[in-house]
Length: 318
Image (cartoon, rainbow, N blue to C red; front, top):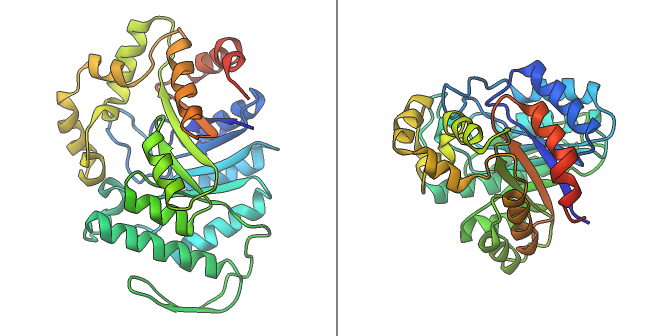
């Protein structure tokens, strides 16, 4: 059975607004929410980036049944994997059978803030794989000493380990990353329809669920939606490795000066017509995705949620 979710965009909303949106998403019948884990927004226009683990605590106290995931955390550099093992274990207690955790190899935008060097992609994947293995070991609740290639832990015990297994969904796009997802993850996390990524994951032996985020900008007119998406989320049109390697929001702002409204409109369904987004959902499901969640760009989340009820949700296959 397919599941459909809603993005809590930490880059665009303050902490209290994120909690309110989670409550609204539950009320509008979404199966899950996914909240981003950033230190910085992509651009200063987006304007926010609260500490996700604090916001999750408030969401646990404000919702009753909706699934809650983090999409995604880089567990390698900015926060040590042992600390994240404790954070996720605590969150799992507060969200019993509702919490899932996306992880990935990260972006310099968030992970270089403590002055650490930014390793090449192959090293980042090695760090990610070791971090996941270490976190799973710490979740067992036993005294742990780990002397790995990248991480050192001595006599560490999590006294409140997860009451139930926490699914780790690994973000992966290339062949090597798909192999990491298949080896140490419980599922795959991508963006867009993603047939090639899903095929690589399955070929590598992965058999878990596949999550994808689809960007959208609903507005009463297509012109208004394109203008909002171009102003707030132009980074969607950046090619290749730029999103992984640019270091600051100012760098992203310089890069997206080359992004036109037409480029954004080509990349993101914009406006009141649900058909372009429904076609994209169909492509994702046909490629093997089974968990699709929607990122409404901009401040008008209430308008999108009404549109979800009246236009989008009725057209989605279950």
